[in-house]
Length: 142
Image (cartoon, rainbow, N blue to C red):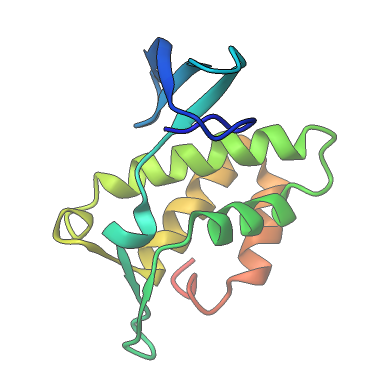
């Protein structure tokens, strides 16, 4: 990796795997300007997973940011909505990766919505209700 300040090569000074999600925290140091900075490496789910809409049978790349935004909108009433949304997004992704279809490289929109709704329901029932209102089509069974 190159330095974010001068563009020269860096070396890893410290590295720690994250306990709850598949990512690695690294402290890097530049060999030229001696600057230090932190990176967070995580899998690129956009390239690894496709989401299939059962109603339209269309495949789209999984977008972590899209999931995050839908959870964030649902938690808008909370003062800690940003931090909570980040943590809940990682929780939902972790639960989705244990899905049998995820091991084959795709997920169903309905499964994505169901896992998100259930995770939110356990964390904040009001947020779950808000989420359900935005995703009625995918949550028709609830």
